[in-house]
Length: 327
Ligand SMILES: [Zn+2]
Image 1 (cartoon, rainbow, N blue to C red):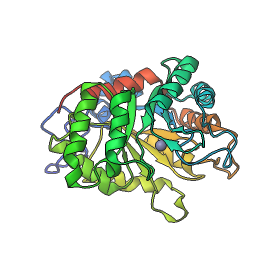
Image 2: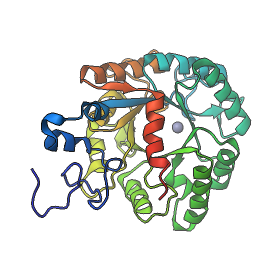
Image 3: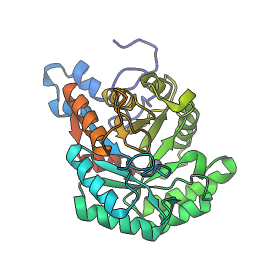
Image 4: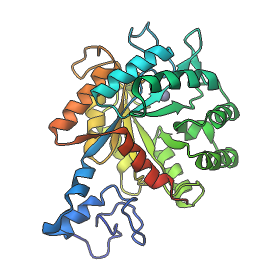
């Protein structure tokens, strides 16, 4: 029920930090509630169903783990391609890719990315959104990170706000880089390691500093908790009243409660990322056989809760609905 004076979203009628003055169909993750509460019998089943469609990304390797940690951590182009095929089959719609040098160390390199991308595309075609990382891992400077992405022009890239624009002085160069990405139709996803970073990005969006009206984000749960084991409640600060609302958000988590964490995100209107970059374990504490087992577990649990798994084209459409609107 709508409180008389409370600020609210025109679509969901809940105080969600949405701007009541504009159409929130894209902006508000709960817009579908309007159909439930106000359209009564004429409920648009397509919109209801859309709210229960959840995308699953896999982050199969990260920049640190190798076969020493688990024999199924893919570090070559061929292994990434095999992992991609298995994860697609298990229900993934996106893959977050790191590449390595010959000593299996983290690498940002145009040729290595092209080799990996070609191998993965040969295995799965366009049925996975391929997102490359721009992560520094303490090795690269922002100018180097941006130069690789500028030349590569990948389908999608993850961007860590705190690496690429650590302070206000670095913002101008970062914002110019974002304008180039928008021009080149490279799809960004902003990695947010803390609610403070989410608030900072929200402010940049609200002030129209980004070349897009809204951007996809990834909430990293429990980054600073003891032992780095995430819990579902680590999502709450990102969704608290007063926090910015991004129209498309994913969550990833560390440790054996990954599945509980990301399923919570999926049920609350978000999307999820699983994989060996952040977690090697099943909920019962056993080590997962491979990345596909983690994806399969997430797809099964979501399915039991009545959600459907979104495919790569749905993910592209959802992102493009935000990214093709200028700020
Ligand atoms: Zn990564």
